[in-house]
Image 1 (cartoon, rainbow, N blue to C red):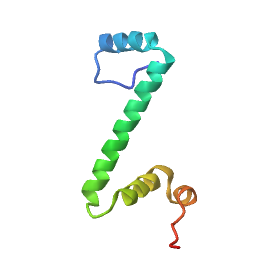
Image 2 (image 1 turned 90 degrees about the vertical axis):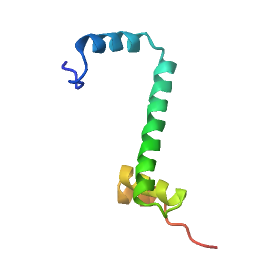
Image 3 (image 1 turned 60 degrees about the vertical axis):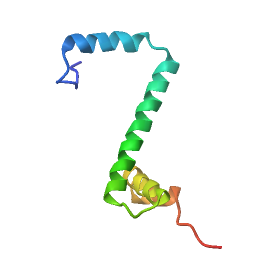
Length: 83
C-alpha cells in the first residue's frame, strides 16, 4: 500500500510504523485523543478569528454545524427556548 505521506522520507515512515506497532492500545488511544483535541483547538481558533463577537457557545455550535451538517446539528443541538 502506498503511503499518503509523499513528503516524508521512506526511512522515517518505516521508523514511524515500527514505533506505532510497539504502542499499546491505550497509548494509541491517547495519541488519537491528543490529536483530536489539537484539531478542535485549531478549528475553534479559526472560527474565533472569523467571528470575534460570538461567545464560546455560539462558536461550538458553529463548529458542530460544520462537522455534522445543518440537519444533524439541529437535531443534536436544538435551539434553546427561554423559560
